[in-house]
Image (cartoon, rainbow over all chains, first blue to last red; front, side, top):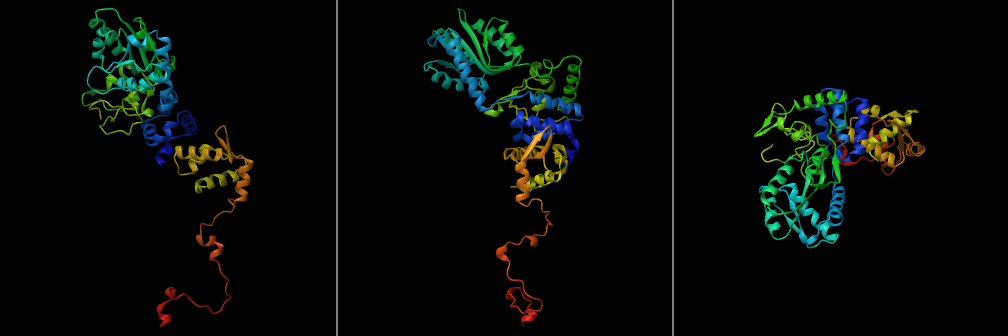
Length: 287
Length: 110
């Protein structure tokens, strides 16, 4: 406690109090939060962390349910798709459980409540072709979060290759990076996403502050382990594909996307010691 | 009410202009979270109010401090606070009394 007392000045305490009001989930993670603050060598580092956390979206169950209802409403009312010819599919490619399947399962109840009780759901990307051949030509991919959109762009390419006939394609996400969604929209596909996020640093700060904040985050990441098993920090620097996300579904028993700044979830310090991180990212073998 | 809550109210009572939250943070051995929760509880009870990082007692808070004797500084001696039901008649000097045998020195009894 005394170490922390010396580490926090009056302005910072005021910001921490404001942060607790805005982000009450931090109250349940005080040890992790304090450890993160103690990692900050200067007041500028701490200010950056506090500023980023103030903008963080930590989805609680109530918010998630609201978003699921909005997505169900879009699918039924605004997508133009009909129940008999639509398949709602996860983008899951392999046999590992993922959040796309989680959201696919969650959306069933709001859809049922809003009138679609006979909708076809598909829990693997590969199974969409079989369902297309059975008349489900309106394909709606659903996922929890989209970062840069590169995975989705890859899936679109593959789908076009696998399906020879005509099909309609739309996307729904709980949350996503605005630039990633625009990458998908640029291909000509409609995207519905109730929570569109700007990049945490590069779309919130402008020159010359932008360069300062970027340097501060780079030096903070310098305190993290360069690699853990087969995972290399440079691949996740500022979030995977530099997504700079400030978002997690942990408040609703979800995972933290790798698009989030690794300072919040990368599990080891430079000298290999485990960190008591603010957020948890499940990725096979990353510990 | 917790002892730390009472101490916070006492400290505010002694400070006519109130106290900065940071002053209380330095004074008490508690974390930012504990202080945040403590202040929120007292604000909800309308005993204190917060303006620009400064805490002051409300009129209800002042009444509470006076009526609950929080203004009386404790000596820290537990024998100063013996409940009435344990207090008997005070005996005179050199007055005879019957001691409780288990607490009496055995050499006197023999």
